[in-house]
Length: 601
Image (cartoon, rainbow, N blue to C red; front, top):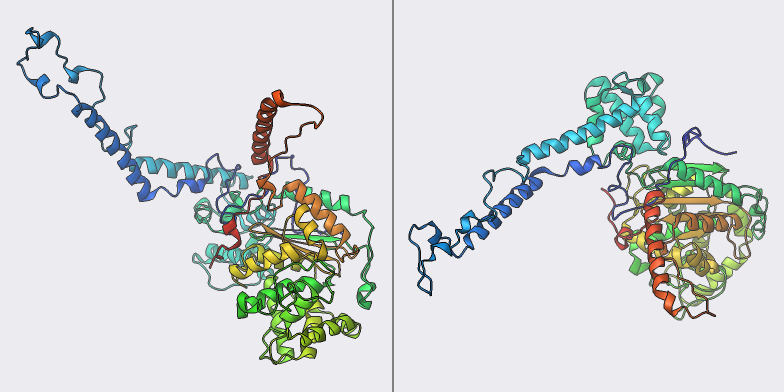
């Protein structure tokens, strides 16, 4: 069953070019809106005193240039005198002496206080603000389809849903809308936040006049303002969702692979489940397929537990016990690196070691409560369940994990005072936490947003911690398929044997794909294929932007004389491709600073 409640895609909309993903240093605040005007309305708000000074300085520079040309004349002083000077030949110099002031030289402008067009800086700024107000007026008119001179909160909510924002699933947006309703009713902002269910149809019929609407749009960082002016992480939301659903349906017929059988509870899962959910760093959400089906998080939990431990103890301390390197072998292999440490936190040995570092001073029950509550906050407050049957099943059949733990104990891997049984219990418990596509996609979006949950705006972990986690996800997150994944998909990701893949596109969005049929390495067959096709379609790979189109020459033909023209044509083709991207796709660009940017307070 497809869940279309998060998109409200209007199928009657005409096809428009895709304006998809283009995060700047700060993921969304610099995008422009083709729906409003050629110039973004916020380009007009940054003039202020600095622009006024720039205008005055430009006029002063032109004035000085004119005066310098005048003063540079060799006859400046003599030309004003009525007495002429003789030449070397003794002739009267009056006929050979030029009056330089009468030549066509620049002179000082009589109107120095204004701009080059004669307008004062204040008038120039006023003109820009008028353009901005006109742009917002056009946006208001587009929402006021009945030309009544107002829009309702319901109209506003519908417009936001078309951009992927639904207050029902977005606590931060819900609070903003409720405060707006209270402002209209009471004439002043409300400090009280009510549940979205408390907003009746009467509230949704509240009228927003132009002045109130203008004040909303003027706030640059307001999520409503950014949504209506095309400054969200994904701008052409409806076409983007249509393309995602198309790839989803293309990969649905794949029936290769089998469910995991070494854990009895997982062997009973319906192998035909297939769901996908997306959550952007702005809270835009899209889901399709079996997105509400609960499943155990399994190895996807390793990323988030690692983040919690790094946040608590620091990454340097954590990596005294576990390494950074891909192991190159199966996720449950008996192997340590040359320093007698597990290779990385994404395999079983490393994840068990990380669990030994989780709040060791607390009791076992409180340690699990700590993890589950933090996972819920990663997911924007979504309810996180627990599958006790899976926990007992994993514990009763986890001989290999017990053997791994004792093997590491023999090699002094664990911190002093660790209890192996308690550590393994916590490991099995975290793997048995219940999530669905929607909640796990939100958890991934929190990582994409530098550790700040996009639905609640709460800082869960620091950006430095997220950077460490994403690096390990890219190099080690897909078991011994990680190298292939980096070359074909090129995104940080973590898979689990329940059939989930958690994908992070830094500064853009998080995504979860769930399909229980696994390949021989333990990764979802449909999930891997979907990600390959989507990454190729949208150029999501972190490295796509670095590689131009290849120039191919026949190895059997000497193209020496044609190489110049061929290369020139390739450059033209690349320029055309770049122009097409800017028009249609705006491919992913991940700045180095985007992985370490500080989250918004």
